[in-house]
Length: 78
Image 1 (spheres, rainbow, N blue to C red):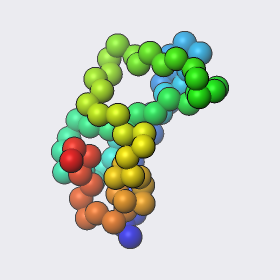
Image 2 (tube, one colour):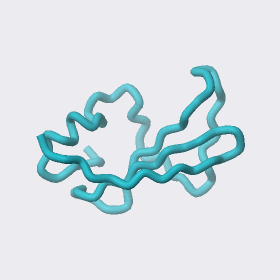
Image 3 (spheres, rainbow, N blue to C red):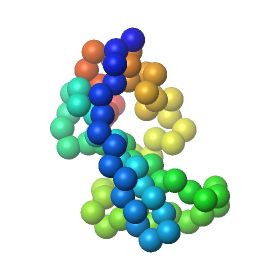
Image 4 (cartoon, one colour):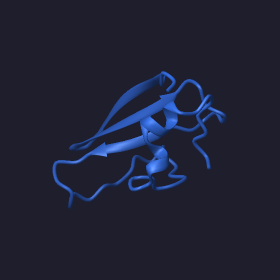
């Protein structure tokens, strides 16, 4: 497995905290993975205006650190 190198940015928006991971070794540029830290699962999420959602990947096993570590160059857009 390869070492995953990424920068994590913490973005507070209202009562929520978003974590944006930007990976160093990717096949594409301009993409990252963002997640919201929710106080409970039923919390309504409004993404910040500056974010464009390309794909919801919460339940997609492709978008795991373990899978990314198996790639020589991370491909975020599949």
